[in-house]
Image (cartoon, rainbow, N blue to C red; front, side):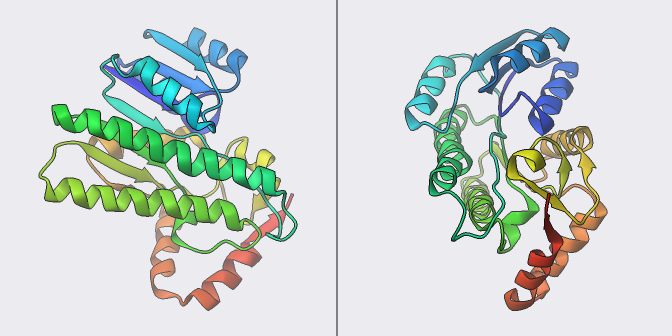
Length: 248
């Protein structure tokens, strides 16, 4: 049994690696920071291959896939991503385009390539990490919210296509609320809502994945919040989101 996790050097990805290793999975761990990956590898109990790589590059994504495509991977977790706080007119375009490349293009590319492989053998799990942000517009983090909406809607469409094809391949989307990870530091934002630990979110997500739950929303508060995103008009929802975010 083997799983590949992107964005594995910290937070949810790191804790998913720990949990899957405890379940007996050999691992391929991908992230930019080699030292973090090496530290994580030393703490795990199964065979671990580390691949230090920036997958925001399409070239690197293809290089990664070609490197691992014959490794009989059963689980792919597309976890790599980052956010950026600020008014859309003032945030750095270069950073936003990097975010689009990582949050959208890398997830899209790896999902497509591994989905084709998994469908050939009618088995496998793909878990895309989005966010509760994917259900709504996000002033002050407009690009991030939009990228997570893309991931969510892409995943939902694939889920339906697999259902119609009567495929046993699983594709799901993890949509957590605030999580206590390095994401908040990188994005330079804090949320006026209690954060879940990354281990709680990782464990919850993996359990739901194996139970074939497709849209995974950890925590009662976030489940309730998601319900209100369905019934509130966008004109009100966008005001609530604006007030819920406060500069670090």
